[in-house]
Length: 185
Image (cartoon, rainbow, N blue to C red; front, side):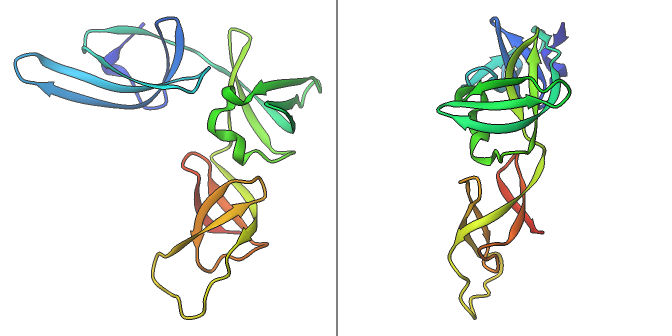
């Protein structure tokens, strides 16, 4: 058991028989009542984010998650299939379990699959991946406004904002945590 005042962003906890990751937290002082800790908790199984307020004396169970690196193979309907690279077994995760990662999955890429008590509960992409731009509007000569961005469609179907100098066929480095352009490769 850990004290709620010891939590960190990204920590995985068990709350009301569900597994949550701490998305955000904030210490708040309330006059005449003492301190409180407001949290945003994301349910790992469903992807739903809830807001919950705790007292500093509250305790909860920190969950230990096992991770295995698997290779993304293909999508079939709402299921996404992965292969264990050690024993070549295939397994699938639903679209709900992957939540917002589905538009950055590229066949052949490695993905960390999370397990809790031998049950697959979700996946994490590497922090940075390289993807090819398949569709974007060409930059206009003379349009050199500092920091100007335009939408670009990536080979996985994701749409992100990129600088004006990026053109179709370029490979860009993406931060998967924020789905943001970092640099051209």
